[in-house]
Length: 109
Image 1 (cartoon, one colour):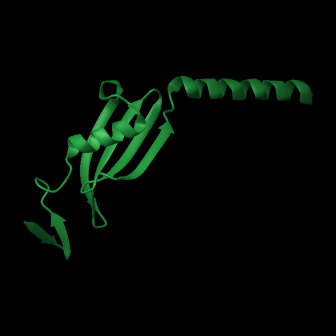
Image 2 (cartoon, one colour):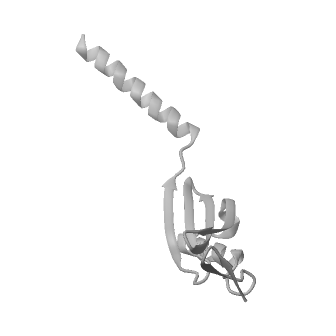
Image 3 (cartoon, rainbow, N blue to C red):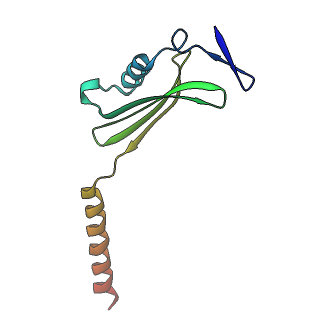
């Protein structure tokens, strides 16, 4: 059974999509992260530009992971890994900037 929405055939999510659990497994396996080690794990279904997909986001070991998994095939549509910036990182950068500024002042006088 299929539904017609704005001229696009939308598969029945209970019978044709891979499901949130499988999408989560695909993303975690690709990242090499165990589910027990992932923080802030979130899986959401979305239908965007005619493509049904699961958005899988999680944090692990100071990195943010963001995946888009095709809801029909299980193919990875997008995989991103970004460094999570922490307060201590910002503090260290500010300390280095202050130190460099002090050295400049010392040698420019």
